[in-house]
Structure formats: C-alpha cells, structure tokens
Length: 138
Image (cartoon, rainbow, N blue to C red; front, side):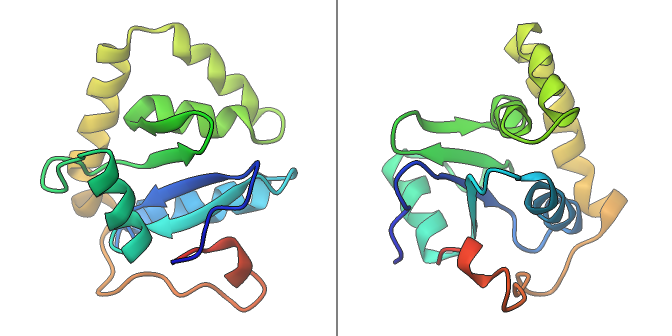
C-alpha cells in the first residue's frame, strides 16, 4: 500500500460508478494546488481505511475524504470540503456547510442511491492514464 504523502488529502470513491469517476476527473481538472490523491473504495487502501474507521461497506456508498490531520469525512461534508479546496467558483460551495447535516446528507444519499440507475456503472475500476497515475494510490 502506498502511503498518503504529507499535506495531501485522499478521496476514496466508488471505482465502478460513472458519476464518481466523472467527479474524480472534475476534481483532477480543478485541483490547481495538486492537493488530492485518489483511491477506489474497492482498493486495498480503500478497504484498509474503511476498516480503520469501522465503516460498514454495505451501508456506505459515499465519497470519503481522508487526511492525516482531519481524519475521515463522509457524504455531503466530504463533497463540500473537497469543493472548498478547488479553484474558484467551485470553492464557493463551502457555504452549504451551514445547512444542517441531516438535510445535506438526505440529498446526498438520494443521489448516491440512484447513481447507477441515472449514470450507469462500469464492470471494473477506472485505470488512470500514465500522466495521472501518480495521483492514484492503491
């Protein structure tokens, strides 16, 4: 398993979800500070972090944000904290953190529950191009 470099944040995502893969591509394009690294929930690293934080893999169909300093964030909080670290105007999404978590997570969970139906799913996890391979941990 590759360690997470200091001062980087790890985004764990569903590697077979088309919406999740598109979101990862979007983050890569707008991550001007080169802050994020990526791993699928299905990878050894993803499973290891899920085990460490006792996340039930049968109940969590979420994007996760992990950093050594801030631990693990899930669902809408993870998505909004990712947006906060992207370029303008994406970083303005952070204002939605003022909304109650249960409301934000209800919306997030509704989308997550329907993501395969609406966006489809791959047979296997995305394989990054050679130029992006350094951003993906396994």
